[in-house]
Amino acid sequence: MKKLIFYFIFVIILIFTMPIVFTNQFKTEEVSAEKLEEKFDYGEYTTIKLLHTSTGEVEEMHLDEYLYGVVSSEMPATFEMEALKAQAVVARTYTIYQIRNGKKHENADMCDSSYNCQAWISKEDRYARWEEGKRDEYWNKIVEAVNSTKGKVILYNGEPINALFHSNSGGATELSINVWGGDFPYFQTVQTSGEQNYTSYSSEVTISKDDLIKKMLEKYSGFQINFSEEEPIKILERTVSNRISRIKIGNIEITGVDARNLFGLKSANFNFEILGDNIKFSVLGYGHGVGFSQCGGDTLAKNGRNYEEIIKYYYKDVEISE
Ligand SMILES: [Zn+2]
Image 1 (tube, helix red, strand yellow):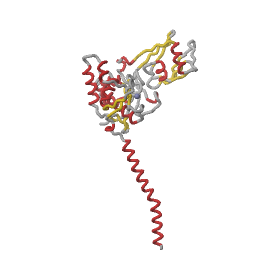
Image 2: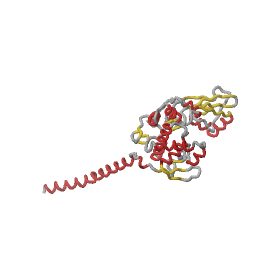
Image 3: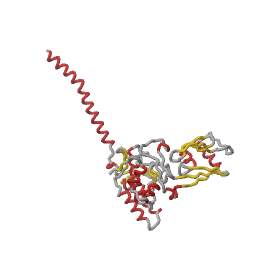
Image 4: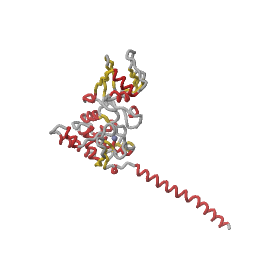
Protein backbone atom coordinates (compact mmCIF):
# COMPACT_ATOMS: atom_id res chain seq x y z
CA MET A 1 0.00 0.00 0.00
CA LYS A 2 2.80 2.42 0.98
CA LYS A 3 4.58 1.55 -2.26
CA LEU A 4 1.43 2.37 -4.20
CA ILE A 5 1.13 5.80 -2.51
CA PHE A 6 4.76 6.61 -3.32
CA TYR A 7 4.23 5.51 -6.88
CA PHE A 8 1.10 7.67 -7.10
CA ILE A 9 2.95 10.75 -5.75
CA PHE A 10 5.82 10.11 -8.16
CA VAL A 11 3.44 10.07 -11.14
CA ILE A 12 1.73 13.28 -9.95
CA ILE A 13 5.11 15.03 -9.65
CA LEU A 14 6.06 13.77 -13.08
CA ILE A 15 2.83 15.10 -14.63
CA PHE A 16 3.51 18.55 -13.19
CA THR A 17 7.20 18.79 -13.97
CA MET A 18 7.35 17.28 -17.46
CA PRO A 19 5.71 20.24 -19.21
CA ILE A 20 8.11 22.63 -17.45
CA VAL A 21 11.11 20.61 -18.59
CA PHE A 22 9.79 20.44 -22.15
CA THR A 23 8.83 24.12 -22.37
CA ASN A 24 12.21 25.15 -21.04
CA GLN A 25 13.86 23.00 -23.63
CA PHE A 26 11.80 24.63 -26.37
CA LYS A 27 12.56 28.07 -25.03
CA THR A 28 16.30 27.42 -25.06
CA GLU A 29 16.02 26.20 -28.63
CA GLU A 30 14.05 29.27 -29.65
CA VAL A 31 16.53 31.67 -28.10
CA SER A 32 19.54 30.07 -29.75
CA ALA A 33 17.78 30.09 -33.14
CA GLU A 34 17.05 33.80 -32.70
CA LYS A 35 20.66 34.49 -31.75
CA LEU A 36 21.89 32.68 -34.84
CA GLU A 37 19.57 34.77 -36.98
CA GLU A 38 20.73 38.00 -35.36
CA LYS A 39 24.42 37.27 -35.72
CA PHE A 40 25.86 39.21 -38.60
CA ASP A 41 26.72 37.09 -41.63
CA TYR A 42 28.11 38.94 -44.61
CA GLY A 43 27.12 36.11 -46.95
CA GLU A 44 23.48 37.15 -46.62
CA TYR A 45 24.14 40.44 -48.36
CA THR A 46 25.18 39.63 -51.92
CA THR A 47 22.39 41.34 -53.84
CA ILE A 48 20.50 44.55 -53.33
CA LYS A 49 17.18 45.95 -54.54
CA LEU A 50 17.80 49.50 -55.71
CA LEU A 51 14.97 52.00 -56.19
CA HIS A 52 15.52 54.46 -59.05
CA THR A 53 13.85 57.61 -57.74
CA SER A 54 13.40 59.17 -61.20
CA THR A 55 11.39 56.23 -62.59
CA GLY A 56 10.14 54.42 -59.49
CA GLU A 57 11.66 51.20 -60.89
CA VAL A 58 13.29 48.68 -58.57
CA GLU A 59 16.39 46.95 -59.92
CA GLU A 60 18.10 43.98 -58.30
CA MET A 61 21.87 43.91 -58.62
CA HIS A 62 25.00 42.49 -57.03
CA LEU A 63 26.12 44.42 -53.92
CA ASP A 64 29.56 45.17 -55.41
CA GLU A 65 28.04 46.45 -58.62
CA TYR A 66 25.77 48.69 -56.53
CA LEU A 67 28.82 49.95 -54.62
CA TYR A 68 30.63 50.95 -57.85
CA GLY A 69 27.70 53.28 -58.51
CA VAL A 70 27.69 54.62 -54.95
CA VAL A 71 31.41 55.28 -54.62
CA SER A 72 31.61 56.90 -58.06
CA SER A 73 28.67 59.13 -57.18
CA GLU A 74 29.57 59.98 -53.59
CA MET A 75 33.32 60.66 -53.94
CA PRO A 76 35.42 62.28 -56.68
CA ALA A 77 37.46 59.64 -58.54
CA THR A 78 40.43 62.01 -58.30
CA PHE A 79 40.65 61.33 -54.56
CA GLU A 80 43.42 59.10 -53.18
CA MET A 81 42.98 55.32 -53.54
CA GLU A 82 43.00 54.76 -49.75
CA ALA A 83 40.23 57.39 -49.36
CA LEU A 84 38.19 55.64 -52.07
CA LYS A 85 38.70 52.31 -50.32
CA ALA A 86 37.54 53.86 -47.03
CA GLN A 87 34.47 55.21 -48.86
CA ALA A 88 33.76 51.75 -50.32
CA VAL A 89 33.86 50.11 -46.86
CA VAL A 90 31.79 52.93 -45.35
CA ALA A 91 29.14 52.69 -48.10
CA ARG A 92 29.01 48.88 -47.84
CA THR A 93 28.58 49.09 -44.05
CA TYR A 94 25.96 51.84 -44.28
CA THR A 95 23.98 49.79 -46.82
CA ILE A 96 24.00 46.64 -44.69
CA TYR A 97 23.10 48.65 -41.58
CA GLN A 98 20.08 50.13 -43.38
CA ILE A 99 18.90 46.68 -44.50
CA ARG A 100 19.31 45.22 -41.00
CA ASN A 101 17.77 48.15 -39.14
CA GLY A 102 14.55 49.01 -40.89
CA LYS A 103 14.54 49.87 -44.54
CA LYS A 104 13.28 53.25 -45.65
CA HIS A 105 11.47 51.79 -48.69
CA GLU A 106 8.74 49.19 -49.00
CA ASN A 107 9.95 47.19 -52.01
CA ALA A 108 13.60 48.22 -52.11
CA ASP A 109 16.65 48.11 -49.84
CA MET A 110 18.04 51.49 -50.87
CA CYS A 111 17.22 54.35 -53.24
CA ASP A 112 19.63 56.32 -55.42
CA SER A 113 19.18 59.68 -53.65
CA SER A 114 21.77 61.19 -51.31
CA TYR A 115 18.97 63.10 -49.57
CA ASN A 116 17.36 59.84 -48.52
CA CYS A 117 19.72 56.82 -48.62
CA GLN A 118 22.95 57.39 -50.54
CA ALA A 119 23.70 58.59 -54.04
CA TRP A 120 24.06 56.05 -56.86
CA ILE A 121 24.80 56.62 -60.53
CA SER A 122 24.89 54.15 -63.43
CA LYS A 123 28.20 53.54 -65.22
CA GLU A 124 26.71 55.02 -68.39
CA ASP A 125 25.66 58.28 -66.70
CA ARG A 126 28.93 58.45 -64.78
CA TYR A 127 30.98 58.14 -68.00
CA ALA A 128 28.95 60.89 -69.63
CA ARG A 129 29.89 63.29 -66.79
CA TRP A 130 33.59 62.45 -66.66
CA GLU A 131 35.96 64.11 -69.10
CA GLU A 132 36.89 62.03 -72.13
CA GLY A 133 40.22 60.29 -71.90
CA LYS A 134 39.92 59.88 -68.12
CA ARG A 135 36.83 57.68 -68.01
CA ASP A 136 38.39 54.19 -67.98
CA GLU A 137 41.11 55.27 -65.56
CA TYR A 138 38.55 56.70 -63.11
CA TRP A 139 36.18 53.74 -63.41
CA ASN A 140 38.99 51.23 -62.85
CA LYS A 141 40.02 53.13 -59.75
CA ILE A 142 36.49 52.89 -58.33
CA VAL A 143 36.22 49.18 -59.18
CA GLU A 144 39.58 48.51 -57.52
CA ALA A 145 38.53 50.41 -54.36
CA VAL A 146 35.42 48.21 -54.04
CA ASN A 147 37.00 44.90 -55.12
CA SER A 148 40.14 45.19 -52.99
CA THR A 149 37.97 45.70 -49.88
CA LYS A 150 35.45 42.99 -50.82
CA GLY A 151 33.45 41.79 -47.82
CA LYS A 152 35.02 44.35 -45.45
CA VAL A 153 32.46 45.79 -43.05
CA ILE A 154 32.89 48.14 -40.07
CA LEU A 155 31.73 46.42 -36.86
CA TYR A 156 31.08 47.60 -33.31
CA ASN A 157 30.48 44.73 -30.86
CA GLY A 158 30.24 42.41 -33.86
CA GLU A 159 27.45 44.44 -35.51
CA PRO A 160 27.67 46.61 -38.66
CA ILE A 161 27.63 50.29 -37.65
CA ASN A 162 25.45 53.12 -38.90
CA ALA A 163 28.34 54.35 -41.04
CA LEU A 164 27.23 57.92 -41.69
CA PHE A 165 29.49 60.10 -43.80
CA HIS A 166 29.64 63.59 -45.26
CA SER A 167 31.68 65.70 -47.64
CA ASN A 168 33.67 68.10 -45.44
CA SER A 169 33.49 68.50 -41.66
CA GLY A 170 34.64 72.13 -41.79
CA GLY A 171 37.25 71.49 -39.13
CA ALA A 172 35.64 68.99 -36.73
CA THR A 173 33.13 66.15 -37.00
CA GLU A 174 29.81 66.17 -35.14
CA LEU A 175 28.02 63.72 -32.84
CA SER A 176 24.82 62.20 -34.23
CA ILE A 177 22.93 63.18 -31.07
CA ASN A 178 23.38 66.85 -32.02
CA VAL A 179 21.91 66.31 -35.50
CA TRP A 180 19.11 63.74 -35.19
CA GLY A 181 19.00 62.96 -31.47
CA GLY A 182 20.18 59.33 -31.89
CA ASP A 183 23.22 58.43 -29.82
CA PHE A 184 25.78 55.90 -31.07
CA PRO A 185 28.97 55.12 -29.10
CA TYR A 186 31.22 55.06 -32.18
CA PHE A 187 30.71 58.65 -33.31
CA GLN A 188 33.13 61.19 -31.95
CA THR A 189 34.27 64.72 -32.57
CA VAL A 190 37.63 64.67 -34.32
CA GLN A 191 39.54 67.46 -36.00
CA THR A 192 40.99 67.01 -39.44
CA SER A 193 43.51 69.48 -40.71
CA GLY A 194 43.75 69.91 -44.45
CA GLU A 195 40.01 70.07 -45.18
CA GLN A 196 40.38 73.79 -45.93
CA ASN A 197 42.16 72.83 -49.18
CA TYR A 198 38.86 71.65 -50.69
CA THR A 199 36.22 73.89 -52.29
CA SER A 200 33.50 72.39 -50.08
CA TYR A 201 35.24 73.79 -46.97
CA SER A 202 33.69 77.25 -47.02
CA SER A 203 30.72 78.84 -48.73
CA GLU A 204 28.42 81.84 -48.52
CA VAL A 205 24.69 82.34 -48.87
CA THR A 206 23.10 85.78 -49.03
CA ILE A 207 19.36 86.23 -48.65
CA SER A 208 17.29 89.38 -48.36
CA LYS A 209 15.51 90.31 -45.13
CA ASP A 210 12.20 89.88 -46.97
CA ASP A 211 13.18 86.38 -48.06
CA LEU A 212 14.20 85.44 -44.53
CA ILE A 213 10.83 86.67 -43.21
CA LYS A 214 8.99 84.74 -45.92
CA LYS A 215 10.87 81.51 -45.25
CA MET A 216 10.41 81.81 -41.48
CA LEU A 217 6.68 82.54 -41.82
CA GLU A 218 6.18 79.51 -44.07
CA LYS A 219 7.38 77.31 -41.24
CA TYR A 220 6.55 79.31 -38.10
CA SER A 221 3.21 81.09 -38.36
CA GLY A 222 3.70 83.32 -35.28
CA PHE A 223 7.07 84.61 -36.48
CA GLN A 224 7.93 88.29 -35.93
CA ILE A 225 11.19 90.18 -36.31
CA ASN A 226 12.21 93.78 -35.86
CA PHE A 227 15.50 94.47 -37.60
CA SER A 228 15.91 97.86 -35.90
CA GLU A 229 16.23 96.11 -32.52
CA GLU A 230 19.60 95.15 -31.16
CA GLU A 231 20.51 91.57 -32.14
CA PRO A 232 17.37 90.60 -34.09
CA ILE A 233 19.23 87.36 -34.86
CA LYS A 234 21.31 85.80 -32.11
CA ILE A 235 23.36 82.61 -31.90
CA LEU A 236 22.57 81.11 -28.47
CA GLU A 237 24.64 77.94 -28.35
CA ARG A 238 27.16 75.92 -30.34
CA THR A 239 28.11 72.23 -30.10
CA VAL A 240 31.68 71.09 -29.35
CA SER A 241 32.34 70.93 -33.10
CA ASN A 242 31.26 74.60 -33.41
CA ARG A 243 27.98 73.87 -35.20
CA ILE A 244 25.05 75.96 -34.04
CA SER A 245 22.71 74.07 -31.74
CA ARG A 246 20.33 76.98 -30.94
CA ILE A 247 19.74 80.27 -32.72
CA LYS A 248 17.08 82.91 -32.07
CA ILE A 249 15.62 84.59 -35.12
CA GLY A 250 13.17 87.34 -34.13
CA ASN A 251 10.83 85.80 -31.58
CA ILE A 252 11.50 82.17 -32.63
CA GLU A 253 14.23 79.87 -31.33
CA ILE A 254 15.29 77.10 -33.72
CA THR A 255 18.15 74.61 -34.10
CA GLY A 256 21.14 75.15 -36.35
CA VAL A 257 20.01 72.16 -38.44
CA ASP A 258 16.58 73.82 -38.93
CA ALA A 259 18.30 77.06 -39.99
CA ARG A 260 20.57 75.13 -42.35
CA ASN A 261 17.61 73.47 -44.07
CA LEU A 262 15.51 76.62 -44.15
CA PHE A 263 18.14 78.88 -45.73
CA GLY A 264 19.86 76.24 -47.88
CA LEU A 265 23.22 76.35 -46.05
CA LYS A 266 25.83 73.63 -46.60
CA SER A 267 26.20 72.97 -42.88
CA ALA A 268 25.05 74.10 -39.43
CA ASN A 269 28.48 75.62 -38.73
CA PHE A 270 27.92 79.23 -39.77
CA ASN A 271 28.19 82.89 -38.90
CA PHE A 272 26.00 85.68 -40.19
CA GLU A 273 26.16 89.40 -40.89
CA ILE A 274 23.30 91.80 -41.45
CA LEU A 275 24.34 94.01 -44.37
CA GLY A 276 21.75 96.60 -45.40
CA ASP A 277 18.73 94.72 -46.73
CA ASN A 278 20.51 91.38 -46.72
CA ILE A 279 21.74 88.68 -44.38
CA LYS A 280 25.00 87.02 -45.37
CA PHE A 281 25.74 83.54 -44.00
CA SER A 282 29.35 82.35 -43.99
CA VAL A 283 29.39 78.56 -43.74
CA LEU A 284 32.12 76.07 -42.87
CA GLY A 285 31.99 72.46 -44.07
CA TYR A 286 29.53 70.57 -46.21
CA GLY A 287 27.03 68.04 -44.86
CA HIS A 288 25.76 66.96 -41.42
CA GLY A 289 29.32 66.42 -40.21
CA VAL A 290 28.73 63.01 -38.58
CA GLY A 291 31.15 60.11 -39.10
CA PHE A 292 33.57 59.83 -42.02
CA SER A 293 34.62 63.09 -43.66
CA GLN A 294 35.48 62.48 -47.31
CA CYS A 295 37.82 65.47 -47.64
CA GLY A 296 39.38 64.65 -44.28
CA GLY A 297 39.85 61.04 -45.40
CA ASP A 298 41.52 62.19 -48.61
CA THR A 299 43.86 64.41 -46.59
CA LEU A 300 44.76 61.54 -44.26
CA ALA A 301 45.44 59.33 -47.31
CA LYS A 302 47.72 62.02 -48.75
CA ASN A 303 49.60 61.91 -45.44
CA GLY A 304 50.17 58.17 -45.84
CA ARG A 305 47.34 56.66 -43.80
CA ASN A 306 45.67 53.52 -45.17
CA TYR A 307 41.92 52.98 -45.41
CA GLU A 308 41.66 51.05 -42.14
CA GLU A 309 43.46 53.82 -40.26
CA ILE A 310 41.20 56.41 -41.89
CA ILE A 311 38.05 54.51 -40.86
CA LYS A 312 39.28 54.09 -37.28
CA TYR A 313 40.11 57.79 -37.16
CA TYR A 314 36.45 58.71 -37.69
CA TYR A 315 34.65 55.85 -35.90
CA LYS A 316 35.71 55.06 -32.34
CA ASP A 317 36.49 51.51 -31.10
CA VAL A 318 35.42 49.77 -34.31
CA GLU A 319 36.77 46.65 -36.00
CA ILE A 320 36.90 45.91 -39.70
CA SER A 321 35.64 42.45 -40.58
CA GLU A 322 37.47 40.04 -42.86
ZN1 LIG B 1 16.07 56.06 -49.96
